[in-house]
Length: 169
Image (tube, rainbow, N blue to C red):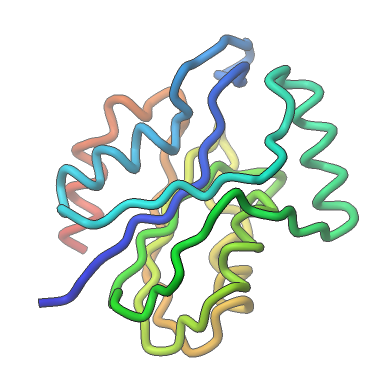
């Protein structure tokens, strides 16, 4: 039996939802990752920066844009010692300007994904997966990158049927 890991990045605090801002205790990607864990029984790991972005949405945006502009890969709070025991990695993240947050780049660069299957999923407010799947392919040569799933952030709590369809392939 293959072993699976859900590795995800998510941001709570002030978030953008279809034209307005509101504070949330749990980020959209974390909501989806939790449902995915219920459906698969996979182990779960939250990718977190050692120095989190600001709680204020607009300040966070500027910080994250600066990381992307400089191709800065922020230090992570922690990481699994190894992913060797996992065959499939569900990789979740919000879409930040057409790709993944830079902390996800940091995570992916730590490990050798050769022979592993990566199933990306992202939350967004209209930009889908962007170039994230090709970015994952570049960072993880030798991995089998399967079709990704894009979920509108405001629909995260109701995404279980989409997840079930995606899991069935």
